[in-house]
Image 1 (cartoon, rainbow, N blue to C red):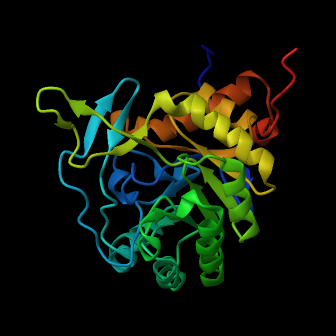
Image 2: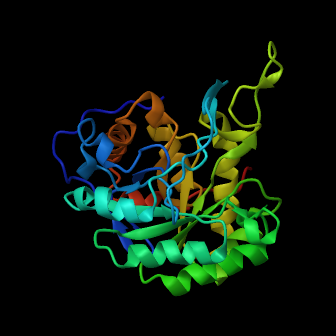
Length: 317
């Protein structure tokens, strides 16, 4: 475990990173679905200290979400089946976005739909609003126009939805990839070729948990998304493979709890990282990680955190 002294002089090091055309003050973002719409945490966290906030996924119309229970613990992680509950894009613009404009933190809108056209319509609605830095496409959604197959499971479908979103957007476009695929590199290249400005790697892993007494799922649905520290080594491999396959930036997401996790992801190719499950146990996890990254840079005399990106030495000899 690395030890760090406290930071007393802000600005001693450069924590900024460039995710394509979007410059972030530091590489720590709150992940979609774990930080609400951001404003709910303003009394607990200094939102201006974060590199960015990816808001709860937005759909064309409000969604009530999945039946309870929606969460259950697993060894070194948790399963969730929230069901993409959200207030809908129009209510977000009217009720949440005005408050978010008061903060200097980059606000990224996570968007999803059940058809290619729905993705475009959500983005078109957001295009009329001020205060957003980028969009993040959640392509781990069933395509109802093609039998319920996930958009993110097939390079051709990835290409179609990303290209349509690209035509609808004037803001930077990030694509959040599913880990439940055979070849993450092929999916990453399809997203890049279709116009993605960055990739988020990766979403949660499809998983199950059973109550042995009732012999039923511990969730209100049969399956849920596995997240937390248990998935980190697997997702780090996906980040390494995806970043090696494309020229656009990769944002790492999966099991980040401590500063070493952030550093590992960046060394393997991530330009920035998102923090998710850790927020459930510690709402200020992102803010504390920013402080820890700054302390690391000072203690090791690293002037720019961006110099760590893709510095992995693949030679194991």
